Image (cartoon, rainbow, N blue to C red; front, side, top):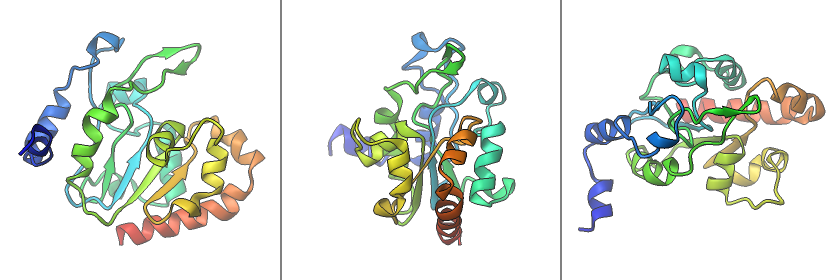
Length: 201
């Protein structure tokens, strides 16, 4: 058995302990490491976002901010369901707050997803729906090149079903994007809610 095979079969509880104690990027994190994830072995809905913001870093609760409220509205699921790790796994591309510059959060640290995602996702049911929130998640899991925009990914969501469902990030910036792309509310959101309901049901 290779080292990677041993890592993939590591007991779930030990894997979570290792994730929460990770300090690989400590020198690059302005507030220090605080990996924030949610995962249970029964989760059939996986949400892969970007990285925790400063508010989430302070609380330690993923998506506990305005973006999280909007995301739950998009999905039409309750807060109780959203925060049930046996139903919903929350795995950002970067598990720690990366800092900010010029009024915006920095991109997720690039070390995190290659180090942890495969091992964590291997613990989940094979039949699951993964929401790819934002371009960082979509670039990794859809393999989209620089010529493909987030709008292209979201508009073409059916091309990636039933495994993946690409979404814009639900920050305040998405308000203008939705205004420019009314098909998102008319076409994408109903399909998204149906897919989420089916995955959780």
